[in-house]
Length: 232
Image (cartoon, rainbow, N blue to C red; front, side, top):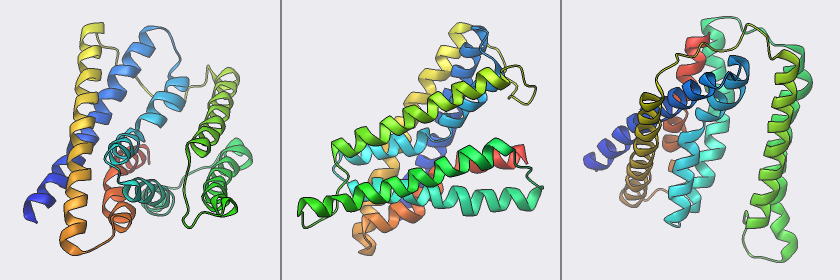
């Protein structure tokens, strides 16, 4: 059991530094192509902090452990809003822009409601269990594409704003090394986390969904926690 804990902890470490490496390398290359720091912050950095959840879910799905995947994504969303936002607000007041209230928060709520609807919609297919199908995955990706279009619309409006992130420009070979390291570390970390969670669920007789909703979700939310604390 101790080895499983060590595997999960080191997996989280690899996930964190893998995401950092991938974001830094990608951001440097994007900056070298004269992409504004505002756009980089809204795309590469924002999506990059969710890369650990993505890779863990892909590994879990490949290994036929859907409970970990669903638990991880739902638990991460809960942790992002309640834990991470709460901790950041304790550190410093967090001003909210009008477009966040009018567009981004409603979009977040729609995404959550859409997931619940798609999961329960399988009841109408007379299945004895709930499922997120490939069609449902396509619908979710469609709405994600709409969100990306919204981000690019914002970038045109605020592309010259000064509140974007500061990107350290590195040489192209160094940036590529960061990206390769990041992808490799993410794959290794995700494999260790999923394998460790499966073995712990068997040892403790806990469901994989429970561990995905708690331990795995909190661990994959570390990049968001660190980013939010630094920003606060």
